[in-house]
Length: 126
Image 1 (tube, rainbow, N blue to C red):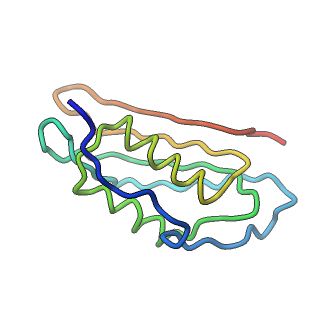
Image 2 (cartoon, helix red, strand yellow):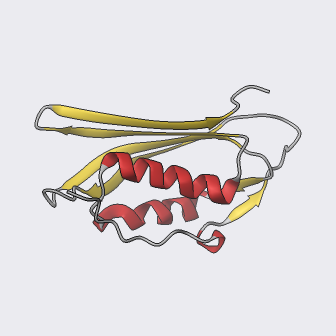
């Protein structure tokens, strides 16, 4: 079975970005989306999860409404947990160019099994 997602790669215009108000300081921004939805590409059933994005911005930060709209693009897409986690990570890394980025996805149990996927890159401390 292959991942059936057909979402195009985002361009910067999909996200509203703003300048880091404290570029000389490393600080963590954590954003939690507890209502993330995608579709299992095998069964067609909805997958529900929580996406937690943690990053140390360099020059840019992401505005939350544009992030929410970006994440909602996945609600009707057939995509495996591992693929969607890495896709979101790659898209955010490409537009933010953060000093540090961690994306953790935690999907609700189905059939008694739950899955969490974490991708992390960069330096977390100074």
